[in-house]
Image 1 (tube, rainbow, N blue to C red):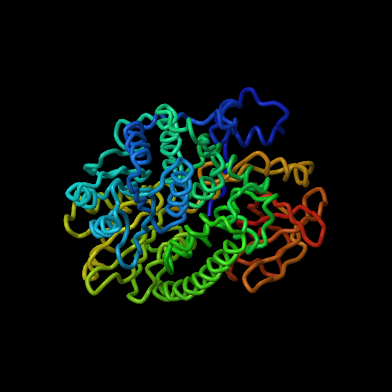
Image 2: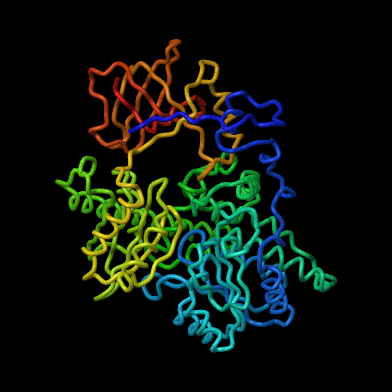
Length: 570
Protein backbone atom coordinates (compact mmCIF):
# COMPACT_ATOMS: atom_id res chain seq x y z
CA UNK A 1 0.00 0.00 0.00
CA UNK A 2 1.39 3.37 -1.05
CA UNK A 3 0.40 6.64 0.61
CA UNK A 4 0.76 9.55 -1.80
CA UNK A 5 0.00 13.15 -0.94
CA UNK A 6 -1.87 15.19 -3.53
CA UNK A 7 -0.12 18.19 -5.02
CA UNK A 8 -2.02 21.38 -5.92
CA UNK A 9 -2.11 22.03 -9.64
CA UNK A 10 -2.32 25.82 -9.37
CA UNK A 11 -3.75 28.27 -6.82
CA UNK A 12 -7.50 28.88 -6.95
CA UNK A 13 -8.35 32.45 -7.87
CA UNK A 14 -11.23 34.46 -6.47
CA UNK A 15 -11.71 32.57 -3.21
CA UNK A 16 -12.76 34.61 -0.18
CA UNK A 17 -12.96 33.62 3.49
CA UNK A 18 -11.82 30.07 2.79
CA UNK A 19 -9.27 28.37 5.08
CA UNK A 20 -5.91 27.80 3.40
CA UNK A 21 -6.20 24.02 3.71
CA UNK A 22 -9.61 24.02 2.03
CA UNK A 23 -8.20 26.17 -0.80
CA UNK A 24 -5.39 23.64 -1.19
CA UNK A 25 -7.91 20.78 -1.28
CA UNK A 26 -9.88 22.54 -4.02
CA UNK A 27 -6.71 23.10 -6.05
CA UNK A 28 -5.76 19.41 -5.95
CA UNK A 29 -9.17 18.56 -7.38
CA UNK A 30 -8.73 20.75 -10.43
CA UNK A 31 -10.58 23.86 -9.25
CA UNK A 32 -8.98 26.91 -10.85
CA UNK A 33 -11.36 29.72 -9.98
CA UNK A 34 -14.18 30.40 -7.53
CA UNK A 35 -16.77 30.30 -10.30
CA UNK A 36 -16.35 26.52 -10.49
CA UNK A 37 -17.70 26.39 -6.93
CA UNK A 38 -20.90 28.26 -7.79
CA UNK A 39 -23.69 25.84 -6.84
CA UNK A 40 -26.59 28.04 -7.95
CA UNK A 41 -28.96 26.78 -10.63
CA UNK A 42 -28.01 29.64 -12.95
CA UNK A 43 -24.54 28.08 -13.20
CA UNK A 44 -25.92 24.85 -14.74
CA UNK A 45 -24.95 24.11 -18.32
CA UNK A 46 -27.92 24.84 -20.61
CA UNK A 47 -30.01 21.98 -21.95
CA UNK A 48 -29.68 23.34 -25.51
CA UNK A 49 -26.05 22.18 -25.54
CA UNK A 50 -27.18 18.54 -25.58
CA UNK A 51 -27.22 17.06 -29.06
CA UNK A 52 -30.64 15.81 -30.11
CA UNK A 53 -32.54 17.37 -27.23
CA UNK A 54 -34.61 19.76 -29.33
CA UNK A 55 -35.92 16.92 -31.48
CA UNK A 56 -36.54 14.75 -28.41
CA UNK A 57 -38.35 17.58 -26.58
CA UNK A 58 -40.59 18.27 -29.58
CA UNK A 59 -41.59 14.62 -29.79
CA UNK A 60 -42.44 14.40 -26.08
CA UNK A 61 -44.21 17.76 -26.08
CA UNK A 62 -46.33 16.76 -29.07
CA UNK A 63 -47.20 13.47 -27.39
CA UNK A 64 -48.38 15.43 -24.34
CA UNK A 65 -50.48 17.95 -26.28
CA UNK A 66 -51.97 15.23 -28.49
CA UNK A 67 -52.62 13.03 -25.43
CA UNK A 68 -50.67 10.11 -26.80
CA UNK A 69 -49.72 7.23 -24.53
CA UNK A 70 -46.11 7.66 -23.33
CA UNK A 71 -44.20 4.67 -21.99
CA UNK A 72 -41.08 5.27 -19.88
CA UNK A 73 -38.75 2.27 -20.02
CA UNK A 74 -36.50 2.29 -16.96
CA UNK A 75 -33.67 0.29 -15.49
CA UNK A 76 -33.38 -1.79 -12.35
CA UNK A 77 -30.76 0.22 -10.42
CA UNK A 78 -31.04 3.41 -8.38
CA UNK A 79 -30.19 5.63 -11.34
CA UNK A 80 -32.85 3.91 -13.43
CA UNK A 81 -35.40 4.11 -10.62
CA UNK A 82 -34.83 7.82 -9.99
CA UNK A 83 -34.84 8.52 -13.75
CA UNK A 84 -38.17 6.72 -14.13
CA UNK A 85 -39.73 8.45 -11.12
CA UNK A 86 -38.48 11.84 -12.30
CA UNK A 87 -40.05 11.38 -15.75
CA UNK A 88 -43.34 10.12 -14.35
CA UNK A 89 -43.67 13.04 -11.93
CA UNK A 90 -42.56 15.60 -14.52
CA UNK A 91 -44.86 14.28 -17.26
CA UNK A 92 -47.77 14.49 -14.84
CA UNK A 93 -46.97 18.10 -13.93
CA UNK A 94 -46.41 19.00 -17.58
CA UNK A 95 -49.97 17.94 -18.38
CA UNK A 96 -49.64 14.42 -19.77
CA UNK A 97 -52.79 12.38 -19.26
CA UNK A 98 -51.43 9.05 -20.50
CA UNK A 99 -48.05 7.97 -19.21
CA UNK A 100 -46.84 4.83 -17.50
CA UNK A 101 -43.59 2.98 -16.98
CA UNK A 102 -42.04 -0.43 -17.40
CA UNK A 103 -38.87 -1.71 -15.76
CA UNK A 104 -37.29 -4.83 -17.26
CA UNK A 105 -37.04 -7.43 -14.53
CA UNK A 106 -33.36 -8.41 -14.54
CA UNK A 107 -34.24 -12.09 -14.13
CA UNK A 108 -36.79 -12.28 -16.95
CA UNK A 109 -35.81 -9.66 -19.52
CA UNK A 110 -32.28 -8.55 -18.71
CA UNK A 111 -31.05 -5.02 -19.28
CA UNK A 112 -32.42 -2.27 -21.48
CA UNK A 113 -34.90 -1.90 -24.30
CA UNK A 114 -35.12 -5.50 -25.52
CA UNK A 115 -37.53 -6.60 -28.28
CA UNK A 116 -39.50 -8.44 -25.57
CA UNK A 117 -39.97 -5.25 -23.55
CA UNK A 118 -41.07 -3.42 -26.70
CA UNK A 119 -43.69 -6.12 -27.28
CA UNK A 120 -44.94 -5.66 -23.72
CA UNK A 121 -45.05 -1.88 -24.11
CA UNK A 122 -47.05 -2.25 -27.31
CA UNK A 123 -49.52 -4.54 -25.56
CA UNK A 124 -50.05 -1.77 -23.00
CA UNK A 125 -50.79 0.78 -25.70
CA UNK A 126 -47.52 2.68 -25.94
CA UNK A 127 -47.44 5.30 -28.72
CA UNK A 128 -44.10 6.81 -27.71
CA UNK A 129 -41.27 5.16 -25.77
CA UNK A 130 -38.79 7.12 -23.67
CA UNK A 131 -35.83 5.13 -22.38
CA UNK A 132 -34.03 6.33 -19.27
CA UNK A 133 -30.55 5.27 -18.14
CA UNK A 134 -30.45 2.82 -21.05
CA UNK A 135 -31.05 2.46 -24.76
CA UNK A 136 -27.83 3.65 -26.39
CA UNK A 137 -26.82 0.07 -27.20
CA UNK A 138 -30.31 -1.39 -27.64
CA UNK A 139 -30.25 -1.69 -31.42
CA UNK A 140 -32.56 -4.72 -31.71
CA UNK A 141 -35.14 -3.22 -29.33
CA UNK A 142 -35.31 0.04 -31.25
CA UNK A 143 -35.64 -1.85 -34.54
CA UNK A 144 -38.57 -3.81 -33.11
CA UNK A 145 -40.24 -0.59 -31.95
CA UNK A 146 -39.74 0.99 -35.37
CA UNK A 147 -41.27 -2.06 -37.03
CA UNK A 148 -44.31 -1.68 -34.77
CA UNK A 149 -44.62 2.05 -35.53
CA UNK A 150 -43.63 3.21 -32.03
CA UNK A 151 -41.04 6.02 -32.07
CA UNK A 152 -38.29 5.81 -29.44
CA UNK A 153 -36.64 8.71 -27.62
CA UNK A 154 -33.44 7.52 -25.95
CA UNK A 155 -32.05 9.25 -22.88
CA UNK A 156 -28.88 7.60 -21.66
CA UNK A 157 -25.39 8.35 -20.39
CA UNK A 158 -23.60 5.08 -21.09
CA UNK A 159 -20.85 4.91 -23.69
CA UNK A 160 -22.22 4.09 -27.16
CA UNK A 161 -20.95 1.25 -29.30
CA UNK A 162 -19.74 1.59 -32.87
CA UNK A 163 -23.33 1.56 -34.12
CA UNK A 164 -26.08 3.81 -32.76
CA UNK A 165 -29.68 2.61 -32.61
CA UNK A 166 -32.03 4.01 -35.23
CA UNK A 167 -34.08 5.94 -32.68
CA UNK A 168 -36.31 8.93 -33.41
CA UNK A 169 -34.10 11.00 -31.07
CA UNK A 170 -31.08 10.35 -28.88
CA UNK A 171 -30.02 12.47 -25.90
CA UNK A 172 -26.71 11.30 -24.47
CA UNK A 173 -23.76 13.59 -23.66
CA UNK A 174 -21.42 10.76 -24.66
CA UNK A 175 -22.76 10.26 -28.17
CA UNK A 176 -20.53 11.41 -31.04
CA UNK A 177 -20.48 15.17 -31.77
CA UNK A 178 -22.30 16.13 -28.57
CA UNK A 179 -20.70 19.31 -27.21
CA UNK A 180 -22.36 19.26 -23.80
CA UNK A 181 -19.55 20.20 -21.36
CA UNK A 182 -20.43 17.58 -18.73
CA UNK A 183 -19.88 14.05 -20.01
CA UNK A 184 -20.54 12.76 -16.49
CA UNK A 185 -24.30 13.20 -16.21
CA UNK A 186 -26.06 10.25 -14.64
CA UNK A 187 -29.10 8.83 -16.38
CA UNK A 188 -31.33 10.85 -14.07
CA UNK A 189 -29.41 14.00 -15.01
CA UNK A 190 -30.04 13.40 -18.71
CA UNK A 191 -33.73 12.74 -18.01
CA UNK A 192 -33.95 15.95 -15.97
CA UNK A 193 -32.50 17.96 -18.85
CA UNK A 194 -35.00 16.43 -21.26
CA UNK A 195 -37.90 17.39 -19.00
CA UNK A 196 -36.54 20.97 -18.79
CA UNK A 197 -36.44 21.07 -22.59
CA UNK A 198 -39.97 19.64 -22.86
CA UNK A 199 -41.24 22.33 -20.49
CA UNK A 200 -39.55 25.07 -22.56
CA UNK A 201 -41.04 23.64 -25.77
CA UNK A 202 -44.53 23.55 -24.27
CA UNK A 203 -44.13 27.14 -23.07
CA UNK A 204 -43.23 28.23 -26.61
CA UNK A 205 -46.38 26.49 -27.87
CA UNK A 206 -48.55 28.36 -25.35
CA UNK A 207 -49.44 25.13 -23.51
CA UNK A 208 -49.33 26.83 -20.12
CA UNK A 209 -51.70 29.65 -21.01
CA UNK A 210 -54.52 27.75 -19.28
CA UNK A 211 -52.47 25.81 -16.70
CA UNK A 212 -49.68 26.44 -14.21
CA UNK A 213 -46.17 25.79 -15.48
CA UNK A 214 -44.35 23.52 -13.02
CA UNK A 215 -41.04 24.26 -11.32
CA UNK A 216 -39.13 21.09 -12.14
CA UNK A 217 -36.42 22.05 -9.65
CA UNK A 218 -38.68 20.55 -7.00
CA UNK A 219 -37.49 17.13 -8.20
CA UNK A 220 -33.80 17.84 -7.68
CA UNK A 221 -33.85 15.69 -4.54
CA UNK A 222 -34.49 12.71 -6.86
CA UNK A 223 -31.80 13.91 -9.28
CA UNK A 224 -29.26 14.20 -6.46
CA UNK A 225 -30.06 10.72 -5.17
CA UNK A 226 -29.66 9.05 -8.57
CA UNK A 227 -26.50 11.01 -9.40
CA UNK A 228 -24.65 10.04 -6.22
CA UNK A 229 -25.98 6.48 -6.13
CA UNK A 230 -24.71 5.84 -9.68
CA UNK A 231 -21.20 6.92 -8.62
CA UNK A 232 -20.72 9.22 -11.60
CA UNK A 233 -18.02 11.86 -11.45
CA UNK A 234 -19.07 14.95 -9.52
CA UNK A 235 -17.88 17.55 -11.99
CA UNK A 236 -19.01 21.16 -11.62
CA UNK A 237 -22.39 20.50 -13.25
CA UNK A 238 -23.16 17.42 -11.18
CA UNK A 239 -22.09 19.19 -7.99
CA UNK A 240 -24.76 21.81 -8.68
CA UNK A 241 -27.43 19.15 -9.14
CA UNK A 242 -26.37 17.33 -5.97
CA UNK A 243 -26.01 20.50 -3.90
CA UNK A 244 -29.44 21.76 -4.91
CA UNK A 245 -31.01 18.37 -4.19
CA UNK A 246 -29.36 18.17 -0.78
CA UNK A 247 -30.64 21.66 0.04
CA UNK A 248 -34.20 20.53 -0.67
CA UNK A 249 -33.83 17.43 1.48
CA UNK A 250 -32.21 19.29 4.38
CA UNK A 251 -34.96 21.91 4.35
CA UNK A 252 -37.70 19.26 4.52
CA UNK A 253 -38.89 19.76 0.94
CA UNK A 254 -38.08 16.30 -0.40
CA UNK A 255 -40.31 13.51 -1.66
CA UNK A 256 -42.19 11.59 1.08
CA UNK A 257 -40.44 8.40 -0.06
CA UNK A 258 -36.97 9.88 0.44
CA UNK A 259 -37.97 11.21 3.85
CA UNK A 260 -39.40 7.79 4.77
CA UNK A 261 -36.16 6.02 3.80
CA UNK A 262 -34.21 8.50 5.92
CA UNK A 263 -36.55 7.91 8.86
CA UNK A 264 -36.18 4.13 8.57
CA UNK A 265 -32.39 4.55 8.51
CA UNK A 266 -32.49 6.98 11.49
CA UNK A 267 -30.71 9.68 9.49
CA UNK A 268 -31.83 13.26 10.20
CA UNK A 269 -32.50 15.07 6.93
CA UNK A 270 -31.14 18.36 8.28
CA UNK A 271 -27.61 16.95 8.49
CA UNK A 272 -27.59 14.85 5.34
CA UNK A 273 -24.34 14.66 3.34
CA UNK A 274 -23.85 13.54 -0.24
CA UNK A 275 -22.23 10.34 1.03
CA UNK A 276 -25.50 9.45 2.78
CA UNK A 277 -27.23 9.41 -0.59
CA UNK A 278 -24.73 6.81 -1.76
CA UNK A 279 -24.34 4.68 1.37
CA UNK A 280 -27.73 5.00 3.08
CA UNK A 281 -30.44 5.65 0.49
CA UNK A 282 -28.83 4.18 -2.62
CA UNK A 283 -28.45 0.61 -1.29
CA UNK A 284 -32.04 0.52 -0.05
CA UNK A 285 -33.32 1.64 -3.42
CA UNK A 286 -30.99 -0.72 -5.28
CA UNK A 287 -32.05 -3.67 -3.13
CA UNK A 288 -35.47 -3.72 -4.83
CA UNK A 289 -33.94 -4.15 -8.28
CA UNK A 290 -31.36 -6.65 -7.06
CA UNK A 291 -33.69 -9.04 -5.24
CA UNK A 292 -37.24 -8.28 -6.28
CA UNK A 293 -38.85 -5.74 -8.58
CA UNK A 294 -37.57 -2.17 -8.88
CA UNK A 295 -41.15 -0.94 -9.17
CA UNK A 296 -41.24 -1.05 -5.36
CA UNK A 297 -38.47 1.55 -5.25
CA UNK A 298 -40.04 3.65 -8.00
CA UNK A 299 -43.44 3.62 -6.29
CA UNK A 300 -41.77 4.72 -3.05
CA UNK A 301 -40.34 7.76 -4.86
CA UNK A 302 -43.68 8.48 -6.58
CA UNK A 303 -45.78 8.12 -3.44
CA UNK A 304 -47.45 11.26 -2.08
CA UNK A 305 -48.83 9.61 1.07
CA UNK A 306 -46.26 9.67 3.88
CA UNK A 307 -47.78 6.66 5.68
CA UNK A 308 -47.81 4.54 2.53
CA UNK A 309 -44.31 5.76 1.72
CA UNK A 310 -43.22 4.61 5.16
CA UNK A 311 -44.56 1.10 4.46
CA UNK A 312 -42.67 0.93 1.16
CA UNK A 313 -39.50 2.29 2.76
CA UNK A 314 -39.74 -0.46 5.39
CA UNK A 315 -40.09 -3.02 2.60
CA UNK A 316 -36.98 -1.62 0.88
CA UNK A 317 -35.11 -1.72 4.18
CA UNK A 318 -36.05 -5.39 4.62
CA UNK A 319 -34.85 -6.19 1.10
CA UNK A 320 -31.58 -4.43 1.84
CA UNK A 321 -31.03 -6.51 4.98
CA UNK A 322 -31.74 -9.65 2.95
CA UNK A 323 -29.28 -8.47 0.29
CA UNK A 324 -26.60 -8.04 2.95
CA UNK A 325 -27.10 -11.59 4.19
CA UNK A 326 -26.90 -13.01 0.66
CA UNK A 327 -23.83 -10.90 -0.07
CA UNK A 328 -22.05 -12.05 3.10
CA UNK A 329 -22.56 -15.70 2.16
CA UNK A 330 -21.39 -15.13 -1.41
CA UNK A 331 -18.32 -13.25 -0.21
CA UNK A 332 -17.37 -16.12 2.07
CA UNK A 333 -17.74 -18.55 -0.84
CA UNK A 334 -15.67 -16.27 -3.11
CA UNK A 335 -12.84 -16.07 -0.59
CA UNK A 336 -12.98 -19.86 -0.38
CA UNK A 337 -12.50 -20.08 -4.15
CA UNK A 338 -9.47 -17.79 -3.83
CA UNK A 339 -8.05 -19.63 -0.82
CA UNK A 340 -4.50 -20.73 -1.50
CA UNK A 341 -3.92 -18.21 -4.29
CA UNK A 342 -1.37 -15.56 -3.36
CA UNK A 343 -2.92 -12.74 -5.31
CA UNK A 344 -0.40 -10.17 -4.12
CA UNK A 345 2.72 -12.02 -5.20
CA UNK A 346 1.63 -14.19 -8.10
CA UNK A 347 2.82 -12.52 -11.29
CA UNK A 348 -0.09 -13.91 -13.31
CA UNK A 349 -2.80 -12.51 -11.05
CA UNK A 350 -3.59 -9.25 -12.80
CA UNK A 351 -7.34 -9.88 -12.62
CA UNK A 352 -9.77 -12.07 -10.71
CA UNK A 353 -12.59 -14.10 -12.29
CA UNK A 354 -15.17 -15.89 -10.14
CA UNK A 355 -18.17 -18.04 -10.98
CA UNK A 356 -20.61 -20.08 -8.97
CA UNK A 357 -23.87 -21.27 -10.49
CA UNK A 358 -26.05 -20.58 -7.45
CA UNK A 359 -24.87 -17.03 -6.84
CA UNK A 360 -27.59 -14.37 -6.96
CA UNK A 361 -27.60 -12.39 -10.21
CA UNK A 362 -28.62 -9.22 -8.41
CA UNK A 363 -25.70 -9.26 -5.97
CA UNK A 364 -22.71 -10.24 -8.14
CA UNK A 365 -21.88 -6.57 -8.80
CA UNK A 366 -21.53 -5.88 -5.10
CA UNK A 367 -19.51 -9.07 -4.67
CA UNK A 368 -17.13 -8.08 -7.46
CA UNK A 369 -16.69 -4.70 -5.80
CA UNK A 370 -15.91 -6.23 -2.40
CA UNK A 371 -13.29 -8.61 -3.85
CA UNK A 372 -11.79 -5.77 -5.89
CA UNK A 373 -11.47 -3.65 -2.76
CA UNK A 374 -9.83 -6.46 -0.78
CA UNK A 375 -7.25 -7.51 -3.40
CA UNK A 376 -7.03 -4.35 -5.54
CA UNK A 377 -7.48 -6.30 -8.75
CA UNK A 378 -10.06 -5.88 -11.52
CA UNK A 379 -12.70 -8.47 -10.62
CA UNK A 380 -15.53 -10.14 -12.49
CA UNK A 381 -18.15 -12.29 -10.75
CA UNK A 382 -20.51 -14.53 -12.73
CA UNK A 383 -23.86 -16.12 -11.85
CA UNK A 384 -26.02 -18.52 -13.84
CA UNK A 385 -28.60 -16.87 -16.08
CA UNK A 386 -29.99 -20.03 -17.67
CA UNK A 387 -28.82 -23.49 -18.68
CA UNK A 388 -26.31 -22.08 -21.17
CA UNK A 389 -25.49 -18.44 -20.33
CA UNK A 390 -23.82 -16.88 -17.31
CA UNK A 391 -24.02 -13.19 -16.51
CA UNK A 392 -21.08 -11.26 -15.08
CA UNK A 393 -20.46 -7.95 -13.32
CA UNK A 394 -17.02 -6.35 -13.49
CA UNK A 395 -15.47 -3.80 -11.15
CA UNK A 396 -12.22 -2.08 -12.01
CA UNK A 397 -9.37 -0.19 -10.36
CA UNK A 398 -8.25 3.38 -11.10
CA UNK A 399 -6.34 3.62 -14.34
CA UNK A 400 -8.04 0.70 -16.11
CA UNK A 401 -11.06 1.33 -18.36
CA UNK A 402 -12.83 -1.98 -17.94
CA UNK A 403 -15.42 -1.51 -20.68
CA UNK A 404 -12.60 -0.90 -23.15
CA UNK A 405 -10.90 -4.06 -21.88
CA UNK A 406 -14.06 -6.03 -22.66
CA UNK A 407 -14.25 -4.38 -26.08
CA UNK A 408 -10.63 -5.44 -26.69
CA UNK A 409 -11.44 -9.06 -25.78
CA UNK A 410 -14.60 -8.96 -27.92
CA UNK A 411 -12.73 -7.54 -30.95
CA UNK A 412 -10.02 -10.20 -30.87
CA UNK A 413 -12.35 -13.07 -29.92
CA UNK A 414 -15.64 -12.64 -31.80
CA UNK A 415 -18.52 -14.59 -30.32
CA UNK A 416 -16.92 -15.16 -26.92
CA UNK A 417 -18.74 -12.28 -25.24
CA UNK A 418 -22.42 -12.37 -26.19
CA UNK A 419 -23.08 -8.80 -25.03
CA UNK A 420 -21.44 -6.21 -22.81
CA UNK A 421 -21.61 -2.58 -21.76
CA UNK A 422 -20.71 -0.19 -18.99
CA UNK A 423 -18.27 2.46 -17.81
CA UNK A 424 -14.59 2.82 -17.00
CA UNK A 425 -15.01 1.42 -13.47
CA UNK A 426 -17.95 -0.95 -13.86
CA UNK A 427 -19.35 -3.12 -16.63
CA UNK A 428 -21.57 -6.11 -17.30
CA UNK A 429 -21.36 -8.96 -19.77
CA UNK A 430 -22.80 -12.33 -20.76
CA UNK A 431 -20.92 -15.43 -21.94
CA UNK A 432 -21.65 -19.11 -22.29
CA UNK A 433 -20.81 -21.05 -19.13
CA UNK A 434 -18.54 -23.40 -21.07
CA UNK A 435 -16.32 -20.44 -21.98
CA UNK A 436 -15.68 -19.28 -18.41
CA UNK A 437 -12.12 -20.64 -18.22
CA UNK A 438 -11.24 -19.21 -21.62
CA UNK A 439 -12.67 -15.82 -20.71
CA UNK A 440 -10.85 -15.83 -17.35
CA UNK A 441 -7.54 -16.44 -19.08
CA UNK A 442 -8.15 -13.76 -21.71
CA UNK A 443 -9.41 -11.27 -19.10
CA UNK A 444 -6.22 -11.72 -17.08
CA UNK A 445 -3.97 -11.49 -20.15
CA UNK A 446 -5.72 -8.42 -21.53
CA UNK A 447 -5.63 -6.59 -18.19
CA UNK A 448 -1.91 -7.45 -17.88
CA UNK A 449 -1.28 -5.97 -21.32
CA UNK A 450 -3.28 -2.84 -20.54
CA UNK A 451 -1.30 -2.44 -17.30
CA UNK A 452 2.00 -2.97 -19.14
CA UNK A 453 2.70 -6.10 -17.12
CA UNK A 454 2.96 -4.01 -13.94
CA UNK A 455 1.08 -5.44 -10.98
CA UNK A 456 -1.31 -2.79 -9.69
CA UNK A 457 -0.38 -1.41 -6.30
CA UNK A 458 -3.03 0.12 -4.10
CA UNK A 459 -2.42 3.81 -3.64
CA UNK A 460 -4.11 5.98 -1.04
CA UNK A 461 -4.19 9.64 -2.02
CA UNK A 462 -4.23 12.04 0.91
CA UNK A 463 -4.38 15.78 1.44
CA UNK A 464 -1.41 15.66 3.80
CA UNK A 465 -1.17 16.28 7.51
CA UNK A 466 -3.39 18.51 9.60
CA UNK A 467 -2.06 21.03 12.06
CA UNK A 468 -3.32 21.09 15.63
CA UNK A 469 -5.75 23.99 14.94
CA UNK A 470 -7.16 21.98 12.04
CA UNK A 471 -7.80 18.89 14.17
CA UNK A 472 -10.89 20.61 15.54
CA UNK A 473 -14.66 20.49 15.13
CA UNK A 474 -14.77 23.87 13.37
CA UNK A 475 -12.48 22.64 10.61
CA UNK A 476 -14.55 19.45 10.23
CA UNK A 477 -17.61 21.66 9.73
CA UNK A 478 -15.72 23.68 7.10
CA UNK A 479 -15.00 20.48 5.19
CA UNK A 480 -18.59 19.31 5.38
CA UNK A 481 -19.89 22.58 3.94
CA UNK A 482 -17.16 22.79 1.28
CA UNK A 483 -18.66 19.90 -0.73
CA UNK A 484 -20.65 18.15 -2.00
CA UNK A 485 -17.94 15.50 -2.09
CA UNK A 486 -18.12 12.33 -4.13
CA UNK A 487 -16.69 10.39 -7.06
CA UNK A 488 -14.00 12.46 -8.82
CA UNK A 489 -14.32 15.21 -6.21
CA UNK A 490 -13.20 13.09 -3.31
CA UNK A 491 -13.92 13.89 0.30
CA UNK A 492 -10.68 15.13 1.91
CA UNK A 493 -8.47 12.40 3.37
CA UNK A 494 -5.52 13.12 5.63
CA UNK A 495 -2.58 11.21 7.03
CA UNK A 496 -0.46 11.54 10.13
CA UNK A 497 1.48 9.75 12.85
CA UNK A 498 -0.22 9.30 16.23
CA UNK A 499 0.40 7.59 19.51
CA UNK A 500 -1.98 4.64 19.90
CA UNK A 501 -3.57 4.85 23.35
CA UNK A 502 -6.17 2.10 23.12
CA UNK A 503 -8.03 -0.17 20.70
CA UNK A 504 -11.03 -2.45 20.95
CA UNK A 505 -13.36 -4.35 18.67
CA UNK A 506 -16.95 -3.17 18.35
CA UNK A 507 -19.69 -4.85 16.36
CA UNK A 508 -17.41 -7.85 15.69
CA UNK A 509 -15.56 -6.26 12.75
CA UNK A 510 -14.99 -2.59 13.54
CA UNK A 511 -11.93 -1.24 15.34
CA UNK A 512 -12.47 1.56 17.83
CA UNK A 513 -9.28 3.41 18.72
CA UNK A 514 -8.07 6.35 20.73
CA UNK A 515 -4.95 8.16 19.65
CA UNK A 516 -2.89 11.16 20.76
CA UNK A 517 -1.48 13.77 18.40
CA UNK A 518 2.09 15.05 18.59
CA UNK A 519 0.83 18.05 20.57
CA UNK A 520 -0.97 15.82 23.06
CA UNK A 521 -4.56 16.07 21.82
CA UNK A 522 -6.58 12.89 22.46
CA UNK A 523 -8.81 11.85 19.54
CA UNK A 524 -11.32 9.06 18.97
CA UNK A 525 -11.32 7.08 15.76
CA UNK A 526 -13.08 4.13 14.17
CA UNK A 527 -12.08 1.82 11.31
CA UNK A 528 -15.04 0.00 9.75
CA UNK A 529 -14.91 -3.57 8.45
CA UNK A 530 -11.24 -4.12 9.26
CA UNK A 531 -9.71 -7.55 8.62
CA UNK A 532 -8.36 -9.01 11.86
CA UNK A 533 -4.88 -9.40 10.37
CA UNK A 534 -4.77 -5.64 9.86
CA UNK A 535 -5.32 -4.79 13.50
CA UNK A 536 -2.21 -3.61 15.38
CA UNK A 537 -1.01 -5.96 18.10
CA UNK A 538 -1.04 -4.94 21.73
CA UNK A 539 2.63 -3.90 21.68
CA UNK A 540 2.21 -1.21 19.02
CA UNK A 541 2.46 2.30 20.39
CA UNK A 542 2.81 4.39 17.25
CA UNK A 543 0.67 4.25 14.11
CA UNK A 544 0.28 6.06 10.84
CA UNK A 545 -3.36 6.77 10.05
CA UNK A 546 -5.10 7.64 6.81
CA UNK A 547 -8.39 9.20 7.87
CA UNK A 548 -11.30 11.53 7.25
CA UNK A 549 -12.68 14.04 9.74
CA UNK A 550 -16.16 13.29 11.02
CA UNK A 551 -18.58 14.98 13.38
CA UNK A 552 -19.91 12.43 15.84
CA UNK A 553 -23.15 13.14 17.68
CA UNK A 554 -24.05 10.80 20.51
CA UNK A 555 -26.45 11.36 23.39
CA UNK A 556 -26.50 15.10 22.84
CA UNK A 557 -22.71 15.40 22.74
CA UNK A 558 -20.90 16.55 19.60
CA UNK A 559 -17.26 15.58 19.15
CA UNK A 560 -14.58 15.18 16.52
CA UNK A 561 -14.01 11.64 15.25
CA UNK A 562 -11.52 10.18 12.82
CA UNK A 563 -12.90 7.76 10.22
CA UNK A 564 -9.85 5.58 9.62
CA UNK A 565 -9.28 4.24 6.09
CA UNK A 566 -5.90 2.66 6.89
CA UNK A 567 -3.88 2.00 10.03
CA UNK A 568 -0.20 1.10 9.76
CA UNK A 569 1.88 0.05 12.75
CA UNK A 570 5.23 1.87 12.99
